[in-house]
Image (tube, rainbow, N blue to C red; front, side, top):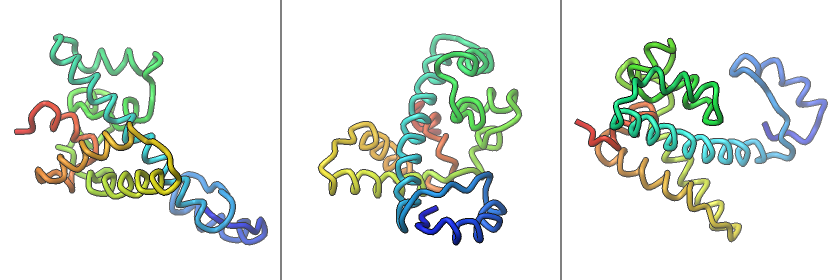
Amino acid sequence: VGCSSSETFSTIKPLLQRMGKGAIPCGEAGSGSAVKLCNNAALAAQMVGICEAMNLGDALGVDPTVLANAMNVSTAKCWSCEVNNPHPTAAKELGSGASANGYEGGFGTALMLKDLNLAVAAGEEEGLALPVAGLARDLYRMADLHGHGRKDFGVILEFLKGFK
């Protein structure tokens, strides 16, 4: 959260912790929003990578649960694979992930698209190239345009397969 006063942060921290797992002081007002955009740009890219890997695994005949378990103890280990795996079979076996429920619940594709639009625009304003965030934004935009905006952002797996 953006808060320049450590005294104020200490006062509001218990309230913030009721809304989420942690409360991290990020600096001046507005810096919390900047941190959120950076985090979600990385998360979107991470999810797209996991979706591509799980899709490739399916095409190569690899059991999705075996692939997810291998990735979760290897260099591909990340939140998108371990906690919110986009493959329905793997998510059911892992015991978590909106894909296990038809991509219902979770963080919506339209919300991820909103954050990616903001992140890419912020990068442009700062004169930065964000090619991976831009590609992720384009994928999420297409998924949203095809009616998947309310589905969890892991629905990109199904979208890449040619969503039915």
